Image (cartoon, rainbow, N blue to C red; front, side):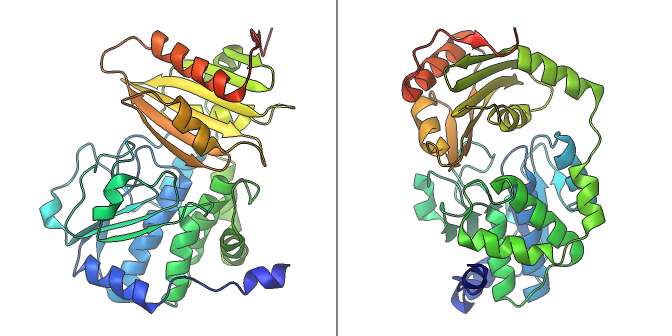
Length: 346
């Protein structure tokens, strides 16, 4: 089985590389990702910047918006992908020969660049594919892939480039977290990248990221979240209230789906004037990306694949209570749950 996987054909060929190089121009290229980027997004952006620079000498600038707050993600940003800059506003796009978005798409609702640019590159693995994609100059969207990192790995491989230990560590961690070590939505191509990157990473740096220190505030938020969690049969709903970090819903959902017998876990929390939503489903269970499209409420946007999905709904000055109740009702209807619900922790 492993030999068959290793011999998979890379779908990225010279034609793809030539197209990317042509659209990128002379540089610099502005590389963007979704708000509050996760390890897959951070590593994918750095991998694309490496491709542009090492293959063709094209400079780039990496800019993200929002916060990187999860302890492991922040450690990764500082140690493995420090090239990323935090920007509260989009840079002047006229200063760049091209714009590239990784791990997101225009129209996804989770990034600030909603309009298609004249020279525009999009590389992503999320479902659904947005309508604006038809107008993008170069698109590579493969929803069957477990991570965007794997797609960038294929571009580097096609260009004859081997990631250095720091980039390999970042890419490995991005792939590992997005697929839960290949147990969540992983394709054969993800297995190839996982195994090959494993041989080139810096194990000490990986350990420093995976074992990043956690604050007392984190454990306080975790305790409050667990006490606001209710069970409806085999379905879990957790209201996290006002959060200090936007990605805490994702972290809670990752933990709660591990509850014995759980089929799905939905976490909702308010960060600023936005309701953050994270959904996880059990392996081999219902598709989280499909479920979240059925429960999202306009003007919110959501996406996902396999066992992982997320979304954001701007509150626009409205109280969150009625919105939370509507999303929970839709979720329980989709999951076929009619139980009154009980507290996770009595």
